[in-house]
Length: 258
Image (cartoon, rainbow, N blue to C red; front, side, top):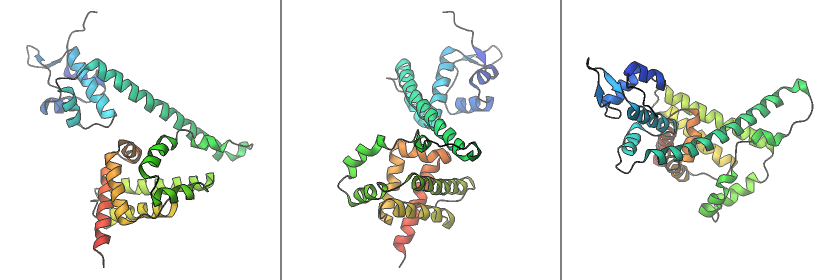
């Protein structure tokens, strides 16, 4: 296959859908440094540079930091074909989950359209939300704990209306946390800690008695397990570490209270 000639930075930016400034930044930090230059000294991006740029953008889409992406790409054992196949599998799974959740959103919109009358399959409201993916893991990790048993006892009695109320309350908390983060509020600020306390009380009321120590442990798990982080970060990029820090600050403050 005939290779296309290298392109200058504006064309590379247009092909990738990024700004020229972004490519300048990647060059400055050593993440994407074109090896070739034109006679006039302009950067020239060849096929290898564009493939590396694609890897950077895929990595960002999958939630990796630029440092993590650089470490992966510069690893002597890095294999582009293997990486692309793994990324395709990840993105395919994400696309399937997104499609399922879109169907659940459509079901909710149909329910709100009361004028059409008729009955609705309420189970469709929860398509795309699959807690069973974690049930066996949760049972193995916490099945003998009082918290797990209490959570299982409570949730077994919840109706669809209960789950909807829980979802609304949870979304309000995450949205308020994201608003505080986006406003530049430090995690140890009383406003951020107040949201963290609401989060603890939600768990305490709906699932199991949630002490400050347990809440602090959950904050560690949210950051360590990408599945929790992916769910929380839907409300704002970087929300997981912000909320975890607010939870720890709230717990530390209340632990120190007389």
